[in-house]
Length: 461
Image 1 (cartoon, one colour):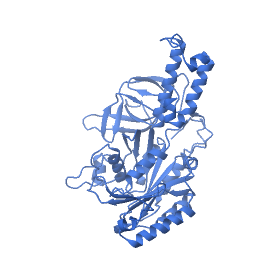
Image 2 (cartoon, one colour):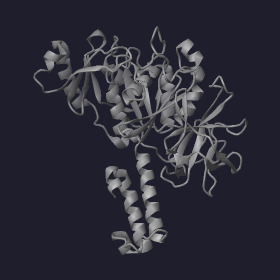
Image 3 (cartoon, rainbow, N blue to C red):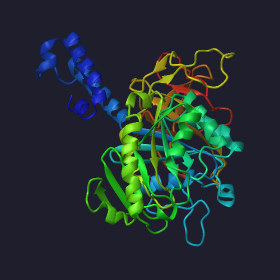
Image 4 (cartoon, rainbow, N blue to C red):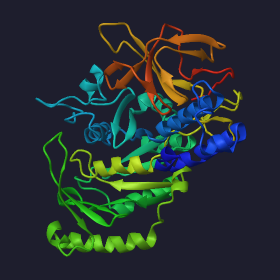
């Protein structure tokens, strides 16, 4: 129960395990197991060990945050991904999409053609630890020519970050990708980017999102100025203003000050009486006109938190990352294939499907991407497998759904950070993505891998 109280979502699991102990072994074993009852090898000892393993699995699931970043081309998707890695501590200096001189290349755009063209062509997985959470960022292509890769990647995500160019508003590919995220029932976070450039009114941007998508907006970060007059952001929930100073390119932004909205020094620190007056008016208007944040509506895809900032200058990026950690959804149950071939047109999930819980003891996962010849020294093939339930360890023996339950031994497995791959030494949990080398014909997109006696096949992607 100690572990459960650190993660409230585990309370139900722990209490049910405790009741199971009572039913199986009686009150004495549940309240204070004796040395005899809990002796090694005894039924009670095995039961206690299983309960501990189940709680540990649920704890690992709870701390996973898996997210895909979607947008129209050139909205700043790869730049934002780099900054999330920078603030997450995965890299010490953010790369540039079009690197010049001594600038380092973007971690997520590692293919030679991506570096030449300055665009994302292939989805990339980037995994790292931040603030006690395991973060898996899925950077996706924005260009329509490579959109199928993006659609498949969204099937592996638990959250989506929609990037909007503050100067252009909603664009065609943003609209298409939003609809895919809605069909997949993903919680959606909106980051309005490029506030360091002349931009549309934040009210106009919110009106566009609500009118076109029929979704309620809840501004969490509100801009103080834009373009050359962009001073920082208001954190509405805490009623604090974060004022930024431009940092060195590729490095973290420097916070000039974090000031309470009621602080008498605020106007002087902003250094612009007009912006200060506009901020006070905006606070009153937002409090009166916008809906409060509702986590249930967020998880159903009916409300989106909106955050304003600038990925290039790092304004608001850390606040976005902290928001994703606190409000983002951990891995959710995955829908099984209903077997209706004729009815599959869009990948829409209705909510009536049979599902597999991430805390299920048996391992399961599905292939959402294949990539070949990324290493010039080897003719390699890698299947990107999203873990959906149980635990995955190198050497695990799994069954293959498309090959009618044929057993495979996954002797090699890799963790991923853009082009960097390292041998998986530990355990992967639901929400994680692992790279599995495979032989020709062995893996295909949509394949389900599983353990246990019951055959599984996840919904098509």
